[in-house]
Image (cartoon, rainbow, N blue to C red):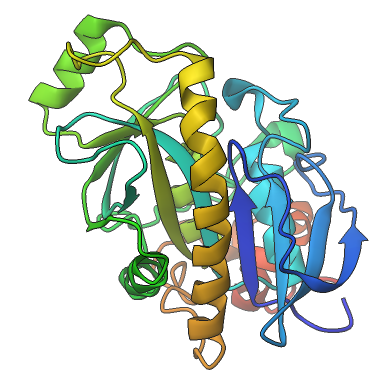
Length: 298
């Protein structure tokens, strides 16, 4: 690319485009992991180049369990993205997180099954022979979380800083028994896509944060109607405009930011003796690991 795009936005249910972008172009990418969900829409906010991707594709064509998360995140890395903001719909598992509220979580719990969770050591796509153990004790970037919290507060909506986000496989909603178990574990909100986005972003040495927009009380709340697509969409119509304004505010605040705090997340995470890592693997993952290998090719 002629100019790096430092900031990225991946939009979930209801957020399929960003009207605030100026000087817009679409970029279609192919990655070692296949095609991303859609073309990246690149434009400017406050003079900053921003790449936007509709997580489920425009028109919401791709089920959560069928998303090519690795292609989506790797595509952002190819564009040069350092700071990635996720906009995600979620259900509430606690009374205080009401529909219409925004949560910027600081912890993540994985209850998915069968998803590709890493870029590394996958012979099916030619990234085998490289084992990486990335640290994910703090799955979200604390610096970007602060930016997103303040950006969301500026919209006038209620915002919650911190919380534990459990990711389920989907595409179905939870049973009442499952929902009650998650509540008993201390989970605060529930969704279907933040895993594996968070760990992939860390492997790609990006800062990653989620603005989670509460659409419903899942199915545990006895005084509320059971969660349905119709009920979710009603709240999404309001949340969508709030989400776009919050992203606009966040990019404005990030304009002078230095490199991502996680720009060297792999420095002490590569365990494989680098002499034995296949050339093809280095080439296929060059946008992530190239700087760690003197022999990395173009």
